[in-house]
Image (cartoon, rainbow, N blue to C red; front, side):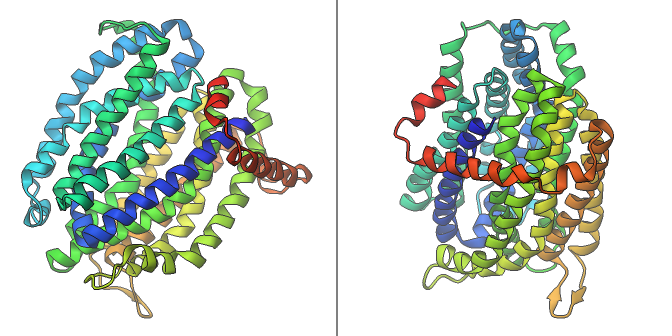
Amino acid sequence: MVKDSIYTLLTRIFIIIGKLISSILINRTLGPMLKGVYELIAIAPNTLTQFGNLGLNHSNTYFTGKRPEDTPRLISNSYYLTAVFSIPAIVLGIGYMQLSANQKIWENAPQWVGYFALIVIPIAILDMLLESILYGQNRIWVRNVHEMLRVLCGIIFIGIFVVGLHWAVTGAVYVFVLVNVTLIAFVLIILFRFHKPVIPRWNPKLAGESWKFARFPWGSNLFGYLVLKVDVWLINALAIGSSTVVLEQVGLYTTAVSAVVTIWIIPQAIHTALLPKIIQKGEAERKKLMPPSIRAVTVLVLLAIILTIIVAKPLLNILFNRPGAPWDFTQAYTPLLLLLPGTFFFALAKIFTADLFSRGKPHFAMWSTAATLVTNIIINLILIPSTYTIGTLPISGMNGAAIASSISYFVLFILLLIIYFRESGEKPGDIFIPKKGDIQIIKEFALKAWEKLGSTNTSNKMDND
């Protein structure tokens, strides 16, 4: 697992660098207000993709690993179900674009680009369903290359449409669509390499089994995504101020979120490598791998948070503020700091969800995430439109959203921690008190990462895995 974690972590580091380049290009070209406009447009197809896949990406991963003989039927169902589930998702997206709270968006971008962005929904759903089948076959390299391709294409298309042609928000939406088209093309090419093409057919028995398993991961994933995204729309709908001020807050808040989300590459790298192994090998492997994974995430995430506190503000200024521009991205530093406590708790929660998923008990994660979402919305409704202050710090707008997120992530952590202890039989000392072997594990992790960075045969090694 360490080797797969290294590959995945290095991929995530590459993704961080690539996303940073993309952010520099977008932020320095659009500024916070137009970035806020783009984020509010993209949130609809992204969220509705999570809704429209009905969690079948999770069941595809599970059944491919447990019952590989069903793989052709899973592929066939994925084509069929994508066509069926995309229709209501697109209808909901059209309704979202017409909401009165979104009319400020169309003061700064043509409304047709919002509808155009919705064509991503069926493309992204099919991409998720088919890529999850390859992932379930323990082809972790496919997921890593998939994400690297997303970043590379994003940089290229942003350079063309946003920076080069100066098409602003319209160009950013073109980038959004073209990246997703490129990704589904890649997944189809890889799929056809390992599997014969199949005709889309409805297999009701397998679909029923898939939904029975997927309903809870779907709910968990959808609620979790909404926890991350609903505050963006609530800032747009509830924050006090002119349209320009509100949209700037959306752009600044999403910049802060993007910065702290980079910390989540640590649990994500371990989660990605951990999940297929503990699904396939069962309880013995789970007991062997889970506790050191949790301890490693705890230490590494704390170090990443400390580094973020030190470097974030100067980097926001250097990277995103260009001379003469009428904006200041360092205003994102305050909500960034307010997000960091929740970032730590969410990172640990990510590892706990892998354990629950591998046990075939994703419903615990779903109900915990639902409680987290309710907590997040309630606190946002109180804080975003408020006029409260703590000293000179306003607890409203984007700051209120950041506080709500941190509190809700803490709720998620506590709920999943309690469930994990009950299901695993582990004690707090087993997972949080450092062990003698932990330093050696981290050293081994770092050494292999360093060696991998110097390797010239990365692609061959990934194929061999």
